[in-house]
Image 1 (cartoon, rainbow, N blue to C red):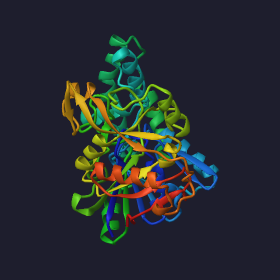
Image 2: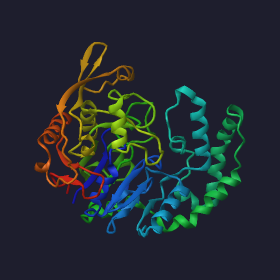
Image 3: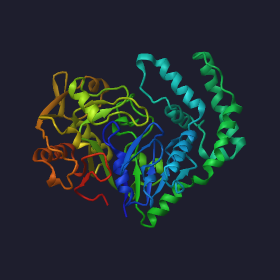
Length: 427
């Protein structure tokens, strides 16, 4: 059976949690391969709503094994709190696996993140302040703490000492903050060791053996394509690779194992944090999208910036990820507009540009070129097939599909688990 990658095709918050959850009953493993607790998913099961921050969405599917891969950065306190919250609600979390090679978000990473972002002032990136960036920086600088280090106190102490040698200099001399004690950090991290031990595994071996046994493995990206550290709107990006290639490095599987890459597209566009956003709305339409769509970050609680659908971004996501399918979410939010603008190109210094500019300067100056599509007023939340949708809604979906460069194989028509139209099976 194929290995599938499911990822965001915009700036994140596209509804990946719902898509992963829908597939969760049909797959054997769901794997988070990058990011940390800066990426939240909301999943609605019946009348129950679950907000997941670090755990893979597959944790809500009884027959599925959820996996936190080596490319994820893990805040132990957040993870244990999330597990406890699900256990209290009757969710079985015992099948969770965590890579021993995943890096730990330490208390000093969180401190550095908050202090440096505050220091940037108007130039701030818009991070969540949860220590994600500094943890990835430690990983690249080879002073990071991994989950497996929690089980060797001597090595853990040496690594914390090495990391704090530099960070304490920065905190005390540049930011006028107190130095952080090595012993305090080591003691806190060791306190998580026994609690995490039942979940720690060689996930690379587990996943490759599962694929050899024809198990179905779904790789779940956090954030979105335009927040990728290499392929996003740098520097207003995350610190990892949510794009499809990140699944291979972040989970330890070869690219030949992956046969389908599914991009999640919202029927309009949102983003959280600073950075360019050509179709952003500052009027009543933008406020209506925010209100009707419930556009508030699951993890951050921040209002999302809202705008019309951007086909330029969708085409870019198709190309960068090698997308084979789209899952279009929140189509129901657009009900009630007489006409719906869709961005088909940009105007940059008087030039029409139909592909994403590689220049950051050009993208900052991009103005959307819109094509107007007729809207609809009918309630679509009960639609079970594509033909159940109003003609104008069908035309909207077909137009987005043609502009985006990959088939739309599923459509979200409401927040619930069952409020989805499946056009083509992902499996």
